[in-house]
Length: 292
Ligand SMILES: O=C(O)CCC(=O)C(=O)O
Ligand SMILES: [Fe+2]
Image (cartoon, rainbow, N blue to C red; front, side):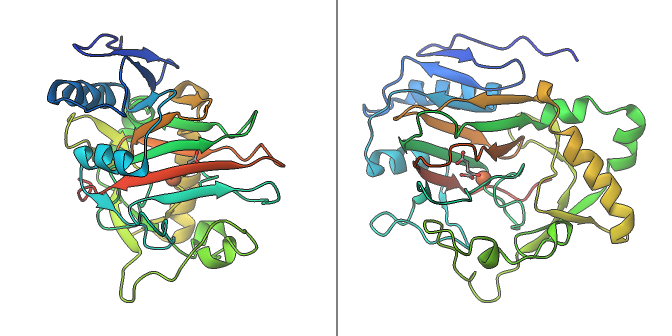
């Protein structure tokens, strides 16, 4: 696998990659200070270049986080989860000492079951465990490019069926039941009439970079015009393929770390390996377009 040489220097900041596949730590930016036009241009470009950007030791208020997020796009509200009372734009992702489950413990891309899935997710660490609780991402440009020409041809025009609830590949369990007994994740019924199963291209083209990537996640439960038994082996193969370590990066959080990832070209996975400790994150998702 040949990785592209990545850009490290921008006019107002530096990007220090933390893995070969994707991900860079941004140095030289204080998010509690006004973000000038040029700083934002550089942040945006570094994000598109590295797919995931992380900032360390930031001290920002919920209002500052919201206004930073709004520079990327308008805020996306989670259809199944109850947001923060005082800041409905923010979802608190919490795992307490005695919770068994965490949120996002599957390879997925946010809201890929919606007609317009979230384009970006911003996670800001308020409290982190002394060890564990890392987030992993996988680069879907690389995962696509690594496929054989035959497989690329085979999947070129396929549409995946993504669902946010009662996924057939995971035993059909409802989200509400999955999070039952979890003291800190607050699922709610989605708004009436909301369609939470949608079809999207399995190979999508990024609207800003023009690059092709795979779009497959834990929400995928079928392929358009395929029988379930026919689709399952292909879905299973691709799910395994996207987890190849060479496509991935892993971030060790500190209090005050902030990560911004591009849901259009990366999958992510929240590690559940810190039992007995608490982890509290402030999460904002940004609205996206319909994948093409
Ligand atoms: O907590 C994390 O590391 C990520 C959780 C997740 O999947 C998300 O916030 O979308
Ligand atoms: Fe997620």
